[in-house]
Image 1 (tube, each protein chain N blue to C red):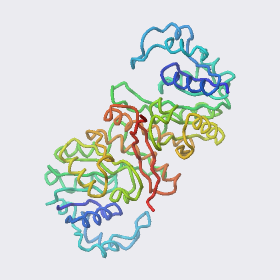
Image 2 (cartoon, each protein chain N blue to C red; image 1 turned 45 degrees about the vertical axis):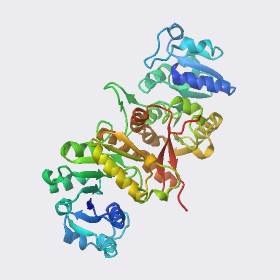
Image 3 (cartoon, helix red, strand yellow; image 1 turned 90 degrees about the horizontal axis):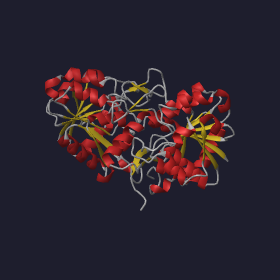
Image 4 (cartoon, rainbow over the protein chains, first blue to last red; image 1 turned 180 degrees about the vertical axis):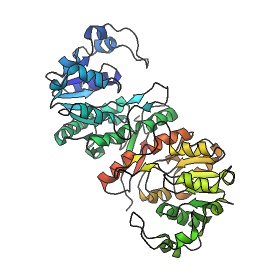
Length: 231
Length: 231
């Protein structure tokens, strides 16, 4: 499948590697290709610049956001939460119409340091805001409740743990579930919460996630919804 | 131990029964004792009125909020989230000073129907608001992320699942952990998230909890933080 990934950071790189290894044709979208390829500094988290990763993953194409989306059957949104609206504006409404848009982003606001707050929550969510702005886009919020390594390789955490999906379009969620299973998610651990308004719930897991990260000193954990009633 | 329970509803009743069965002396606090004992209507959830429960639990004392707290070594707050501040005002600052206050409530706002929103979140929490208003009270937010049956009897859900604690006072959290263990919580499933500001995180689990309740058609599930990294 032709897949577009929006965002050149750690999350975009992890999805690109994983999806390419699964046999997909992957194009990463960025604002300015030349600028991204000229990067030499580590990112804010100390990760090496994009060209270092791209050297060992050079069959992954790098294009503008609009070019990456054109011809893609599915889009993985791996931008930061505060960047996604600008990125989508640069693509425009028409090229996004009818596309599957798997939204991994969270509306984290680090402007007051750690722990971050959410820039939207409670009565809306970033997933809903994207869906409202692009009604013909098939937004599925998923995988936003865990660290990226676990998203694409759930076996990093032993036993059962949960991945959620929120979205208005049943076919889009079915396709998302197929991607999830290809990453190693077992069907019983995939919970379809309902329409895109349920993204409020999963985005609002982030405040406890960041506190658990601080407490456990590792991002290698995940939420599990334990529904095993005693008999 | 002498224990005060604030609130005569299902949650208060469940804690009263459990704590009394564990050998504690339990006093339930209410606004007006005569009014509570005169109730004949089911509550909004269809549960029988307090006197029905009290008939088979008549060694549990019923007093005013202030009388219940006086002489209590620990207070379980089982009021609804929108009632707690008024209840504490009726008790006053001095009687609450130095007391352990285990806060189970959530700031759920049902004024726009289901699903509820939160009346405070993101930059504060009900736990924090209580702590701010009563600095000498030792507030520990705990057990607010599950249905009441599981709070007092975690064996209702098989396997591992998690209960959180948030609070500023280490001794108060240690006492809370002792109560949790007496209810059946295993030490490895009790997570001390840190100070009372971490209550934001656990209260913000409610939006996904209510969606899971709608999806699963049962409240008999719980969050588990799976930290078992693959080797």
